[in-house]
Length: 218
Image (cartoon, rainbow, N blue to C red):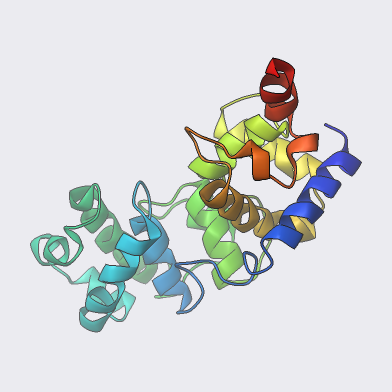
């Protein structure tokens, strides 16, 4: 896809979801530590589910030091409603211990350092860097972004690493952090995984899926 076409699509989506860039559901408030923990917990789980455990978790473990000393069983009790809560409990405790032992209790501000923390991959690191630290070093590719990148025509693969590189090549760096939030909003509202609502989509005339599948079949 040409950069000018990608830019046009992005502008239409920003117009359609004016609040998406300013109000990410989970990470709109809180310290960098809270953003890190919540992002680890959000994997394979809905935002609503994570928000329900936010209060109880940070009421008990408000700092990396507190969570680093937490018992796995007690943390599991708080987050048991989330998917993969056994692994997530271990990860957020281990992440807190790493913050203390390696980074002086602070969330590091580089991709390379964040990737050394248990439970943190590029997607989580990108979210933390942008929403907690205001840094655009990459693009977080979750399930919505992966699906939409392929459907719309931003990328030709389902490999998240390649998709991120394709998106970074298409869009200017100052848009990287917002792209994730805008595509997630579109994926949740219109471009559903099973039943995309192409008939009301603001970008259908520019979308590879619509042009090659839906419109062609009419």
